[in-house]
Amino acid sequence: MEKLTLKDKRIVVTGGAGFLGKQVIAQLCQAGATRDKITVPRSPDCDLRVWENCQRAVDQQDIIIHLAAHVGGIGLNREKPAQLYYDNLMMGTQLIHAAYEAGVEKFVCVGTICAYPKFTPVPFKEEDLWNGYPEETNAPYGVAKKALLVQLQAYRQEYGFNGIYLLPVNLYGPEDNFDPGSSHVIPALIRKVHEAQVRGDKQIPVWGDGSPTREFLYSKDGARGIVMSTQFYNDSEPVNLGTGYEISIRYLINLIRELMEYEGEIVWETDKLNGQPRRCLDTERAKQAFGFTAQVDFREGLKNTIAWYRQHAA
Image 1 (cartoon, helix red, strand yellow):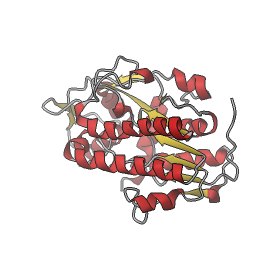
Image 2 (tube, one colour; image 1 turned 135 degrees about the vertical axis):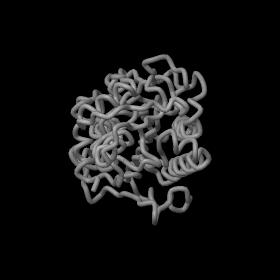
Image 3 (tube, one colour; image 1 turned 180 degrees about the vertical axis):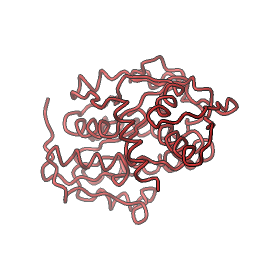
Image 4 (cartoon, one colour; image 1 turned 60 degrees about the horizontal axis):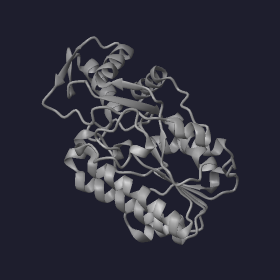
């Protein structure tokens, strides 16, 4: 397979200051990119919802890796569906158009597993992406991100623009977002257990009934997959990035309790939403197309994430 050489390429990584973005930049450098040629637009002075900022961000650049997203767990998706739809659609669609107009060589768009239909057969195959409407709690976010796949495919067809689209599962790892108002399930549960231990609480509440299943990809693995696709993948079809390993939320919280040595009781808040019933990806396309398979064991990744949070919790 033909390899895109990264040395001396001018690369923009939107969301590059985030926990995944930092790993992507590290992996880019490992793969030969020149650090001082990598640019990270920051939202305070480069709000990508503004067209002129998108033009400025892509000017004279060779590769755009679009990670930036307004994203969160079930709570945030219920509270701010309009903002999640608008922000993600506007950032992505304007950035793609600006990159095409600027003659950018390659656009790598990181989508979301939330784009899959609510009742997708497990494991999720990329060809099932359009076979139904996403799970209602995160549909606005999922649909906005899925629209960017349509745009990239249309721009490839009409303009020959080389844009690829990736579908990572739930990412986790050190430096994740642990804010209870917007975090995903792993950082939310780690923080919940930690704070219960600090206070001496004998029980903790957890949303839902524990039955939904999820798949989790360690951020370093996710970053490696993104960089491998940047170098080796040039097709219009979306690609899953995951582990193919599915666990229930009930198993997850019990594993976190074990690793954090918390002996308190879990109180299931069954009046709260469960979210999508099952999530697990078919990862064969990534393996065949550019040789990606996840390497970090889930238990090991969870230990690293817990250790990082405990170190920084104060």
